[in-house]
Amino acid sequence: MIEFFADSTILEMRIVEIKERAINVSRYADASLGGQLSTSLVAIVTDARVDGEVLTGYGFGSFGRFAQSGLIRERFAAKLLAAPQHALLGDDRQFIDPIKAWGVMMLGEKPGGHGERCVAVGTLDMALWDLAAKFKKQPLHRLVAKTFGRQPSEHTQAYAGGGYYFPTDDIPRLTEEIQHFHNLGLNTVKIKVGSASTTTDTKRIEAALDVVGSTNRLAIDAMNNYDHSQAIEAAHAFVPYGLRWFEDICDPLDYETHKTVAQQYAPPISAGEAIFSLSDARNLFRYAGLRPQHDTLTFDPVHCYGIPEFVRVIEAAERSGWSRQDFFPHGGHLFGLHVACGLGLGGCECNPHNFQPLGGFGDGSVIRNGTVSPPDAPGIGFETKSNFMDLIRQSF
Image (cartoon, rainbow, N blue to C red):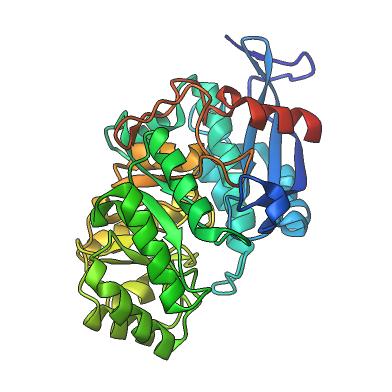
């Protein structure tokens, strides 16, 4: 049942308040090991109730960047709060349409200058989609599929993100972590390279392979650390392993190095995590030497200005010969899982024990042989993740 508060004179949803808080997250399950980043947590509160509960949408800025408090509060939340109500409402004039709200946030924004403006918009976009799907009383992946004229998938492949360098006992702790992922049902794993010598990194790869058992079940991520000569050296060292993919090799805008590596490294490579706009994505497809339907694209939907721009990135990729199955969104959280199922992508990342309490899926999620389903709950399903809701209560 949809209800509106007594002071709402017409049946049109209104945003009452937008709350934001910067929180710290760690790359490690044990946050005392370091690896600290931050992200923005937001809540969009409306004047509507669903089954007696105040209708509120939640979002956060995914992982890998930093909190966007100023941009969210002073620029994009302010646009949403100041907008005429008709500019936000869907065709039925009852609920806030995330596509129209996205247009309001981007109104007057100049081309270029993407920086991390895109993360601020994507953070609010996540909350707007959570809000809309809750209003529709359906899981987000089904609303996304319907919005973009697709049939939703009720499950997708997921791989485990992690494998960061441990400050002590790196190899034993790395193998223990990967075994933990396997015990959870995540049989494909991504580990980090590029912050140590090639000799050290090959030892990490071989230790990981001893656990996963197959080169197709191990990906490596250099976190954009290599310069041109280092990238070539690493590619030559890693090529014999034939791994699932070699990700974020160099600076994300160094298309020349990407292209050179692609010419010399036959196994799949991966890029896109640090590409945040349609215009930059087009340049990646044109100039980085990536090989459609061989390589992997790991764009983060939140960091790409949210779902509307992310869909445009997918469509541009398809025009360049890519398949949706080549997309494995970065992030490792419930939102990425819904997006992958709603848009028919190849799979998604899962961060089961790092970046808590935001990483990973719902408390009842079951991963079997690397396959997982989104929670059958309205919205993104954050309410199925108890540590996330504890954070919400503490924050707001």
